[in-house]
Length: 346
Image 1: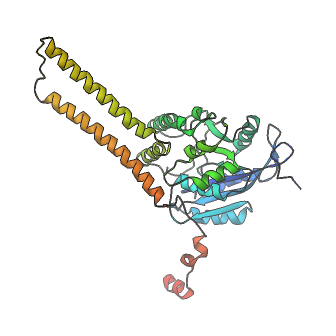
Image 2: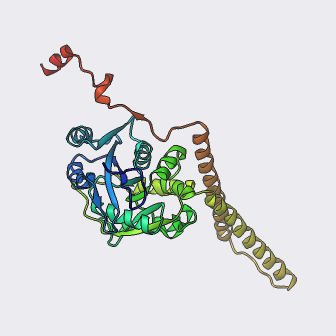
Image 3: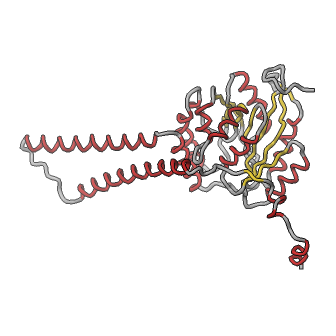
């Protein structure tokens, strides 16, 4: 019998794979075939023993037939565990729900669309053990299979927010949904992360050393993206708000800048008067521009403050980040009366 209690070379490392499922009807079967290879004990290139002991498919109530596919996969593979959510919560809450339900020494999160290659997991584990890292992010060596504008916006957002993840190397990392982490770190983050808190920012608060592993992204499966530009913008803004008080600091900086500009202009006017120069602002155009700039800055600042208050209110109200339920098919909603079924068939 393999020793699954150790965490070094003498013991076998157990891995839990978390896959949030929204539109996985066409891609899950092929992805699980690849993952199943590592459901048996394997040796990594670095000489470490590992095995994927469970795959948690988190159903996020998408618009396709993913639920039926998940049930079939659970019957086909004994290591597949469906996790059912009460409604659609989004990718990050769904990922956290899977992390909270995982029991392995390590937790791996990857997307359902086949873009992430399960074969890279073994190298990510080697990086974690060689560098004593609590978290390892995939570092793509090629551009994601999206349009130029989306790739540029995504890359800029990740770089802008990388410093919010905390110390221990996290500031040099671009966040990715393909990641490996210590199981106790993942389960703890899933337990304390509140509503509106971005997963990777929350993990940066408590994780130790963070490392990266180079991977090559594959083409997405035959399915439409679940993200629009509007949802991506909302996603980015949530990262800003959950990263701490940097947004409020921006308000302070903005106020200081306008105060300095106002002081300089006032000083300029006073000096012009004392020196005998007849400096006159012509027309209303300059006044209107100044009012629009100051008014815009004030409204922008109030908007940021209101967003922070909204996040605080949601957390104070106890708004849940996700809710795990039983399989709807096994409950009252899935119960069909034989007579009703006969009537419907007619």
